[in-house]
Length: 460
Image (cartoon, rainbow, N blue to C red; front, side, top):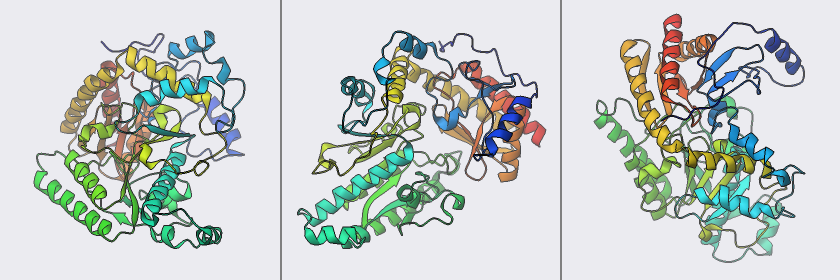
């Protein structure tokens, strides 16, 4: 039985009105960049899987604020928790959690975050966003690698070299990443990002190595030999690089989200992890977009069946805060090495605490598997009906994608989809990505594919 959200609309309804939205965009654009904004939402009217804009248009939201909505809009559990006063302590002020945290913070972190820790990883760093999480995972990897290579505590000469930006050992190491990967926009994470030139152009970057990503072609049975060869080439390139001894770590997404919903097999990731361990390269898994249950397992890397856990798992989005899980063996040898003022936010952690309780109570992980299977079948049938316009249905759980003919066609389909009531996003050069909330049900999947078909028909 799919979750039912009280007062959720019966379906999408677009009137075409945009007066209030246009006025807000004009005001907003005077002081900030409003060009990327799809819609101004009416938060009070939005419910469940439906985003209602300020002009009363109702859109079925499968974009989910770029995969950031665990429970959709207006789930009653959050307002109930606030009315009960469960989190009043988190509303008083935003504390510097590394200096003077409120006493309930320890219980909240254990209940909300340590309870979902990936197997084998017992330490946690909380920050504000995905980019911050990746940035600090990279720093943790450098601390672990440099400490292992150097073997002794840093001396005076190391400290002087650090102040002059001339550390010989750290400066000759790098973080390997993959073509098409997206890991954030801070300078360290941006150096590992490889999805679009727009993200990197005109910013300084570390000269870190890039590896080919196998990017499986679909249907898998049709391209089995080609996909296997592609993964073999990528693994050979990784081994050749790791053998040089210049990598502190390698970072990879289970599914390349921003880069176009590109996949690799569990076997590929298993072998990549083995190579990293063999050559002393720290293995970082970026689950900012995939973490939180949308792929059918709470962490997408669970589906790989790793014998040896990742060294670091990075998260954000659905979990409301950014963070890094890692093993005690990789904890910094002294405090204050990884630090910032906030180290998270009690209010956002409280939101995730409520969400996680609902996910368990309403068995939403089971719903994701069931509805994801149905959504995948619906997308396959849609591609069969429109083979000249759509291709490569793929995904896991409700984390799905389909390809359009080219970039221009994809962008037109996205615009037409919004015009008929489907809030959907693009990824990569020509993909449409589905990132619905975990409360996404079978009827929503059927409606979403119907709206998408109408958009494809009008764009073709």
